[in-house]
Amino acid sequence: MQVTDITALKDCGAPLDGAMIDDPPGGAGDTPQIAFDLDKQHTIAQEIDNSGHSGTYDITGDYFANHTLDTKKGDRQPITIWARTYEQNCTFSLEFTVLDSNGETRKQQVRNGDRDFEVSAYLSSVQEYREIYVAGLSKMTLLMEEGLDVGELGDEPGIREVSPQRFTEIAGGG
Image (cartoon, rainbow, N blue to C red; front, side, top):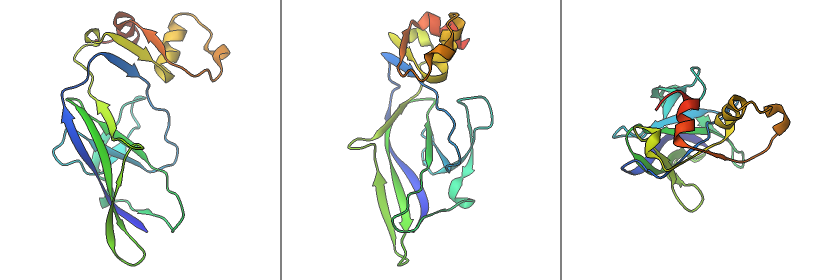
């Protein structure tokens, strides 16, 4: 079986306000990485270059022009999907175009369980949020700047609430 295309089927509107959760992704390992720019009219699978700063990436072109995703029946092929928008809030599902072993093409829709995936652009200033929660790398930065020994935390899960003002200080922007 071969995946020959993936498209994001989206429904977009104004960015969400209220609470912001900042939990930057970790490394993706050796899995294929595919990006979608949800601000574009047509959201095709694109190549990704995340060799820059942590949590940032560039979308560089049509993924399936240079790659294929092949699996045998019953095998699993994990992939990492990156979806971004700088302008809006989008819910979306992914439509896979698959060429099966009989040479027939079919479409398969993938969702986040029983609902669509969702991503929202940041508001123009973090001060516009009522609440901000940080986790992952952002949480470690916050704890280190407060003088806490992050080595003692181990793998403590969780999200920590901070004020919009404190987040601006930590992130160095606004």
